[in-house]
Amino acid sequence: MSEHGVMHLWGEAQRARLVQLCAALTRDRHAAEDLAQETLLEAWRNREKLHDASGAERWLAAIARNVCLRWARRRAHELPVAAADQPVDVVAELDRPELEELVDRALSLLPPATRDVLVHHYVDESSHAEIAARLGVSEAAVSMRISRGRAVLRRLLNGEPPDSENGGWRDTRVWCTSCGQRRLQMRREETAVSFRCACGTPSPSAVYDFANPVFARLVGGLVRPSAILKRTAEWSAAYFAEGAGAADCIRCRVDVRLALFNAGRRGLYGRCGACGVEVWSSVVGLAHAQPEAREFARTHARVRTRAPQEISYDGAPATLVRLDAVGGTARLDVVFARDTLRLLGAH
Image (cartoon, rainbow, N blue to C red):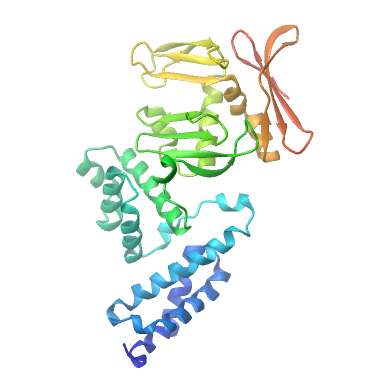
Protein backbone atom coordinates (compact mmCIF):
# COMPACT_ATOMS: atom_id res chain seq x y z
CA MET A 1 0.00 0.00 0.00
CA SER A 2 1.24 3.50 -0.83
CA GLU A 3 2.22 5.99 1.83
CA HIS A 4 -0.68 8.18 0.73
CA GLY A 5 -3.03 5.26 1.27
CA VAL A 6 -2.01 4.75 4.87
CA MET A 7 -1.79 8.38 5.98
CA HIS A 8 -5.30 8.14 7.50
CA LEU A 9 -3.93 5.65 10.04
CA TRP A 10 -1.96 8.40 11.74
CA GLY A 11 -4.88 10.76 12.35
CA GLU A 12 -5.97 12.00 15.76
CA ALA A 13 -9.04 9.73 15.85
CA GLN A 14 -6.91 6.62 15.29
CA ARG A 15 -4.37 7.73 17.88
CA ALA A 16 -7.16 8.31 20.44
CA ARG A 17 -8.53 4.83 19.76
CA LEU A 18 -5.09 3.29 20.28
CA VAL A 19 -4.65 5.19 23.55
CA GLN A 20 -7.98 3.78 24.74
CA LEU A 21 -7.02 0.24 23.71
CA CYS A 22 -3.58 0.44 25.36
CA ALA A 23 -5.14 1.83 28.54
CA ALA A 24 -7.60 -1.11 28.62
CA LEU A 25 -4.81 -3.65 28.08
CA THR A 26 -2.38 -2.20 30.63
CA ARG A 27 -4.66 -0.41 33.13
CA ASP A 28 -2.15 2.43 33.01
CA ARG A 29 -3.50 5.58 31.40
CA HIS A 30 -0.17 7.38 31.60
CA ALA A 31 1.72 4.56 29.88
CA ALA A 32 -1.03 4.24 27.26
CA GLU A 33 -0.04 7.52 25.57
CA ASP A 34 3.54 6.34 25.04
CA LEU A 35 2.43 2.85 24.00
CA ALA A 36 0.04 4.26 21.41
CA GLN A 37 2.87 6.34 19.97
CA GLU A 38 5.12 3.28 19.92
CA THR A 39 2.37 1.38 18.10
CA LEU A 40 2.07 4.06 15.43
CA LEU A 41 5.85 4.17 14.99
CA GLU A 42 6.03 0.39 14.57
CA ALA A 43 3.11 0.48 12.13
CA TRP A 44 4.85 3.16 10.05
CA ARG A 45 8.04 1.11 9.89
CA ASN A 46 6.05 -1.92 8.70
CA ARG A 47 3.51 -0.07 6.52
CA GLU A 48 4.41 -2.14 3.47
CA LYS A 49 2.88 -5.19 5.21
CA LEU A 50 -0.61 -3.66 5.13
CA HIS A 51 -2.09 -4.66 1.78
CA ASP A 52 -5.81 -4.14 2.47
CA ALA A 53 -6.99 -0.83 3.91
CA SER A 54 -10.23 -2.45 5.15
CA GLY A 55 -8.23 -4.40 7.73
CA ALA A 56 -6.20 -1.42 8.94
CA GLU A 57 -7.88 -1.09 12.33
CA ARG A 58 -7.42 -4.74 13.24
CA TRP A 59 -3.82 -4.62 11.99
CA LEU A 60 -3.08 -1.66 14.25
CA ALA A 61 -4.86 -3.33 17.19
CA ALA A 62 -2.69 -6.44 16.77
CA ILE A 63 0.46 -4.29 16.80
CA ALA A 64 -0.81 -2.48 19.92
CA ARG A 65 -1.37 -5.78 21.74
CA ASN A 66 2.18 -6.90 20.98
CA VAL A 67 3.56 -3.55 22.16
CA CYS A 68 1.53 -3.81 25.39
CA LEU A 69 2.65 -7.40 25.93
CA ARG A 70 6.31 -6.37 25.72
CA TRP A 71 5.60 -3.52 28.13
CA ALA A 72 3.85 -5.88 30.58
CA ARG A 73 6.77 -8.32 30.53
CA ARG A 74 9.22 -5.53 31.29
CA ARG A 75 6.98 -4.28 34.10
CA ALA A 76 6.68 -7.79 35.58
CA HIS A 77 10.31 -7.57 36.66
CA GLU A 78 9.79 -4.17 38.28
CA LEU A 79 6.44 -4.32 40.09
CA PRO A 80 6.08 -5.64 43.69
CA VAL A 81 4.76 -9.18 43.84
CA ALA A 82 1.57 -8.15 45.65
CA ALA A 83 0.54 -5.76 42.89
CA ALA A 84 0.54 -8.45 40.21
CA ASP A 85 -2.27 -10.44 41.81
CA GLN A 86 -4.88 -7.69 41.42
CA PRO A 87 -7.88 -8.54 39.21
CA VAL A 88 -7.79 -7.04 35.71
CA ASP A 89 -10.98 -7.33 33.67
CA VAL A 90 -9.38 -7.04 30.24
CA VAL A 91 -12.25 -8.82 28.48
CA ALA A 92 -14.80 -6.22 29.55
CA GLU A 93 -12.69 -3.45 27.99
CA LEU A 94 -12.20 -4.93 24.49
CA ASP A 95 -14.45 -4.52 21.47
CA ARG A 96 -15.93 -7.47 19.61
CA PRO A 97 -13.23 -7.99 16.92
CA GLU A 98 -10.56 -7.98 19.61
CA LEU A 99 -12.55 -10.42 21.75
CA GLU A 100 -12.98 -12.78 18.80
CA GLU A 101 -9.23 -12.78 18.17
CA LEU A 102 -8.45 -13.49 21.82
CA VAL A 103 -11.02 -16.27 21.96
CA ASP A 104 -9.50 -17.84 18.84
CA ARG A 105 -6.08 -17.87 20.52
CA ALA A 106 -7.51 -19.43 23.67
CA LEU A 107 -9.67 -22.11 22.04
CA SER A 108 -6.92 -24.71 21.76
CA LEU A 109 -6.09 -24.29 25.46
CA LEU A 110 -9.59 -24.82 26.81
CA PRO A 111 -11.66 -27.94 27.51
CA PRO A 112 -14.43 -28.37 24.89
CA ALA A 113 -17.22 -27.50 27.34
CA THR A 114 -15.57 -24.21 28.32
CA ARG A 115 -14.68 -23.45 24.70
CA ASP A 116 -18.31 -23.86 23.57
CA VAL A 117 -19.58 -21.52 26.27
CA LEU A 118 -17.04 -18.82 25.39
CA VAL A 119 -17.93 -18.95 21.71
CA HIS A 120 -21.66 -18.72 22.44
CA HIS A 121 -21.15 -15.87 24.90
CA TYR A 122 -18.56 -13.65 23.18
CA VAL A 123 -18.97 -14.50 19.50
CA ASP A 124 -22.70 -15.36 19.25
CA GLU A 125 -23.53 -12.86 22.06
CA SER A 126 -25.98 -15.31 23.63
CA SER A 127 -27.29 -14.77 27.15
CA HIS A 128 -26.45 -17.13 30.02
CA ALA A 129 -29.99 -18.53 29.91
CA GLU A 130 -29.78 -19.19 26.16
CA ILE A 131 -26.41 -20.92 26.50
CA ALA A 132 -27.64 -23.04 29.42
CA ALA A 133 -30.69 -24.19 27.42
CA ARG A 134 -28.59 -24.92 24.34
CA LEU A 135 -25.98 -26.98 26.20
CA GLY A 136 -28.29 -28.58 28.75
CA VAL A 137 -26.48 -27.19 31.80
CA SER A 138 -27.36 -24.76 34.58
CA GLU A 139 -26.80 -21.01 34.33
CA ALA A 140 -24.39 -21.35 37.27
CA ALA A 141 -22.30 -23.80 35.21
CA VAL A 142 -22.29 -21.33 32.32
CA SER A 143 -21.03 -18.55 34.58
CA MET A 144 -18.34 -20.85 35.98
CA ARG A 145 -17.05 -21.80 32.52
CA ILE A 146 -17.01 -18.20 31.34
CA SER A 147 -14.95 -17.26 34.41
CA ARG A 148 -12.43 -19.99 33.62
CA GLY A 149 -12.19 -18.89 30.01
CA ARG A 150 -11.67 -15.29 31.02
CA ALA A 151 -8.80 -16.42 33.27
CA VAL A 152 -7.08 -18.02 30.27
CA LEU A 153 -7.50 -14.82 28.26
CA ARG A 154 -5.92 -12.77 31.05
CA ARG A 155 -2.94 -15.10 31.23
CA LEU A 156 -2.49 -14.95 27.46
CA LEU A 157 -2.41 -11.16 27.61
CA ASN A 158 0.25 -11.35 30.30
CA GLY A 159 2.37 -13.72 28.23
CA GLU A 160 2.05 -16.58 30.73
CA PRO A 161 2.42 -20.21 29.59
CA PRO A 162 -0.76 -22.28 29.14
CA ASP A 163 -1.96 -24.60 31.87
CA SER A 164 -1.40 -27.62 29.60
CA GLU A 165 2.30 -27.39 30.48
CA ASN A 166 3.55 -28.99 33.72
CA GLY A 167 0.55 -31.29 33.94
CA GLY A 168 -1.82 -28.37 34.24
CA TRP A 169 -0.12 -26.98 37.36
CA ARG A 170 0.86 -23.31 37.37
CA ASP A 171 2.59 -21.21 39.98
CA THR A 172 0.52 -18.74 41.97
CA ARG A 173 1.69 -15.69 43.91
CA VAL A 174 0.44 -17.17 47.20
CA TRP A 175 3.15 -18.35 49.59
CA CYS A 176 2.78 -21.81 51.08
CA THR A 177 2.01 -21.35 54.79
CA SER A 178 3.38 -24.78 55.64
CA CYS A 179 6.99 -24.41 54.45
CA GLY A 180 7.12 -20.65 53.96
CA GLN A 181 9.73 -21.19 51.20
CA ARG A 182 7.75 -21.80 48.03
CA ARG A 183 4.64 -20.50 46.35
CA LEU A 184 1.58 -22.67 45.97
CA GLN A 185 0.71 -24.22 42.62
CA MET A 186 -2.85 -24.43 41.33
CA ARG A 187 -4.49 -26.68 38.75
CA ARG A 188 -7.94 -25.82 37.46
CA GLU A 189 -9.82 -28.54 35.61
CA GLU A 190 -13.36 -28.86 34.34
CA THR A 191 -14.33 -30.84 37.43
CA ALA A 192 -12.16 -29.43 40.24
CA VAL A 193 -9.57 -26.94 41.41
CA SER A 194 -6.51 -28.22 43.30
CA PHE A 195 -3.61 -26.68 45.22
CA ARG A 196 -0.23 -28.07 46.22
CA CYS A 197 3.16 -26.85 47.37
CA ALA A 198 5.99 -27.38 44.90
CA CYS A 199 8.24 -28.63 47.71
CA GLY A 200 5.75 -31.24 48.86
CA THR A 201 4.59 -34.59 47.54
CA PRO A 202 3.21 -34.89 43.98
CA SER A 203 -0.31 -35.47 45.29
CA PRO A 204 -2.52 -32.37 45.73
CA SER A 205 -2.77 -31.00 49.26
CA ALA A 206 -6.25 -29.56 48.68
CA VAL A 207 -8.87 -30.54 46.11
CA TYR A 208 -12.28 -28.89 45.66
CA ASP A 209 -14.56 -31.06 43.52
CA PHE A 210 -17.16 -29.15 41.49
CA ALA A 211 -19.36 -32.24 41.37
CA ASN A 212 -20.23 -31.24 44.90
CA PRO A 213 -22.72 -28.34 44.69
CA VAL A 214 -21.23 -26.70 47.79
CA PHE A 215 -17.78 -26.31 46.22
CA ALA A 216 -19.24 -25.47 42.81
CA ARG A 217 -21.21 -22.65 44.37
CA LEU A 218 -18.43 -21.65 46.75
CA VAL A 219 -15.48 -21.29 44.33
CA GLY A 220 -16.64 -22.44 40.90
CA GLY A 221 -16.92 -18.90 39.59
CA LEU A 222 -13.74 -17.57 41.19
CA VAL A 223 -10.50 -17.06 39.27
CA ARG A 224 -7.82 -15.66 41.57
CA PRO A 225 -6.05 -18.28 43.75
CA SER A 226 -6.05 -15.92 46.74
CA ALA A 227 -9.83 -15.47 46.46
CA ILE A 228 -10.40 -19.23 46.18
CA LEU A 229 -8.23 -19.97 49.21
CA LYS A 230 -9.89 -17.23 51.28
CA ARG A 231 -13.38 -18.51 50.49
CA THR A 232 -12.54 -22.15 51.21
CA ALA A 233 -10.75 -21.25 54.45
CA GLU A 234 -13.80 -19.35 55.68
CA TRP A 235 -15.98 -22.34 54.86
CA SER A 236 -13.60 -24.81 56.54
CA ALA A 237 -13.34 -22.77 59.75
CA ALA A 238 -17.14 -22.68 60.02
CA TYR A 239 -17.82 -26.31 59.02
CA PHE A 240 -15.26 -27.90 61.37
CA ALA A 241 -15.75 -25.40 64.21
CA GLU A 242 -17.19 -27.94 66.65
CA GLY A 243 -14.61 -30.61 65.90
CA ALA A 244 -15.45 -34.32 66.03
CA GLY A 245 -19.12 -35.18 66.30
CA ALA A 246 -22.34 -34.66 64.35
CA ALA A 247 -22.36 -32.52 61.20
CA ASP A 248 -24.41 -32.12 58.02
CA CYS A 249 -23.39 -33.76 54.77
CA ILE A 250 -22.16 -30.97 52.51
CA ARG A 251 -24.07 -32.48 49.56
CA CYS A 252 -27.34 -34.01 50.75
CA ARG A 253 -27.53 -32.45 54.25
CA VAL A 254 -28.17 -35.73 56.13
CA ASP A 255 -26.36 -36.34 59.43
CA VAL A 256 -22.67 -37.23 59.17
CA ARG A 257 -20.28 -37.99 61.99
CA LEU A 258 -16.88 -36.33 61.88
CA ALA A 259 -14.24 -38.55 63.47
CA LEU A 260 -10.56 -38.20 64.32
CA PHE A 261 -8.00 -39.84 62.08
CA ASN A 262 -4.27 -40.33 62.53
CA ALA A 263 -3.20 -41.85 59.22
CA GLY A 264 0.11 -40.06 58.76
CA ARG A 265 -1.27 -36.75 59.98
CA ARG A 266 -3.92 -35.91 62.52
CA GLY A 267 -7.24 -34.45 61.46
CA LEU A 268 -10.99 -34.85 61.00
CA TYR A 269 -12.76 -37.10 58.51
CA GLY A 270 -16.37 -37.80 57.64
CA ARG A 271 -18.19 -39.87 55.02
CA CYS A 272 -21.90 -39.63 54.23
CA GLY A 273 -23.62 -43.01 54.31
CA ALA A 274 -26.38 -41.75 52.02
CA CYS A 275 -24.51 -40.17 49.09
CA GLY A 276 -20.91 -41.28 49.77
CA VAL A 277 -19.35 -37.81 49.73
CA GLU A 278 -16.21 -37.49 51.86
CA VAL A 279 -14.87 -34.49 53.72
CA TRP A 280 -11.68 -34.11 55.69
CA SER A 281 -9.07 -31.68 56.98
CA SER A 282 -5.75 -32.12 58.71
CA VAL A 283 -5.20 -30.29 61.98
CA VAL A 284 -2.69 -28.04 60.17
CA GLY A 285 -5.35 -27.22 57.59
CA LEU A 286 -7.78 -26.43 60.40
CA ALA A 287 -5.22 -24.09 61.94
CA HIS A 288 -4.57 -22.27 58.66
CA ALA A 289 -8.32 -21.78 58.16
CA GLN A 290 -8.80 -19.81 61.38
CA PRO A 291 -9.33 -16.03 60.98
CA GLU A 292 -6.38 -15.30 63.29
CA ALA A 293 -4.07 -17.49 61.17
CA ARG A 294 -5.22 -15.89 57.92
CA GLU A 295 -4.63 -12.44 59.36
CA PHE A 296 -1.20 -13.53 60.63
CA ALA A 297 -0.27 -14.79 57.14
CA ARG A 298 -1.57 -11.60 55.54
CA THR A 299 0.42 -9.42 57.93
CA HIS A 300 3.72 -11.30 57.70
CA ALA A 301 3.51 -12.39 54.04
CA ARG A 302 5.65 -15.52 54.52
CA VAL A 303 4.79 -18.00 57.26
CA ARG A 304 5.95 -21.52 58.07
CA THR A 305 4.16 -24.04 60.24
CA ARG A 306 5.76 -26.30 62.82
CA ALA A 307 4.69 -29.92 63.26
CA PRO A 308 1.72 -30.30 65.65
CA GLN A 309 2.62 -30.88 69.28
CA GLU A 310 0.71 -32.55 72.10
CA ILE A 311 0.50 -30.18 75.08
CA SER A 312 -1.57 -29.41 78.14
CA TYR A 313 -3.79 -26.34 77.81
CA ASP A 314 -5.60 -25.06 80.89
CA GLY A 315 -5.04 -28.47 82.43
CA ALA A 316 -6.59 -30.41 79.51
CA PRO A 317 -4.94 -32.45 76.71
CA ALA A 318 -4.52 -30.31 73.60
CA THR A 319 -2.85 -30.15 70.18
CA LEU A 320 -0.75 -27.11 69.32
CA VAL A 321 -0.04 -25.83 65.80
CA ARG A 322 2.52 -23.01 65.77
CA LEU A 323 2.97 -20.55 62.89
CA ASP A 324 6.24 -18.60 62.66
CA ALA A 325 6.88 -15.49 60.58
CA VAL A 326 9.75 -16.19 58.18
CA GLY A 327 12.62 -13.81 58.86
CA GLY A 328 11.12 -12.52 62.10
CA THR A 329 10.26 -13.43 65.67
CA ALA A 330 6.46 -13.17 65.50
CA ARG A 331 4.47 -16.35 66.03
CA LEU A 332 0.88 -17.53 66.41
CA ASP A 333 -0.19 -20.53 68.48
CA VAL A 334 -3.42 -22.25 67.45
CA VAL A 335 -4.67 -24.74 70.05
CA PHE A 336 -7.26 -27.51 69.63
CA ALA A 337 -8.82 -29.94 72.11
CA ARG A 338 -6.93 -33.19 71.60
CA ASP A 339 -9.96 -35.48 71.68
CA THR A 340 -12.22 -33.47 69.34
CA LEU A 341 -9.98 -30.93 67.54
CA ARG A 342 -12.37 -28.19 68.53
CA LEU A 343 -10.63 -24.82 68.56
CA LEU A 344 -9.61 -23.69 72.05
CA GLY A 345 -7.72 -20.53 71.19
CA ALA A 346 -5.41 -18.68 68.80
CA HIS A 347 -2.93 -16.20 70.25
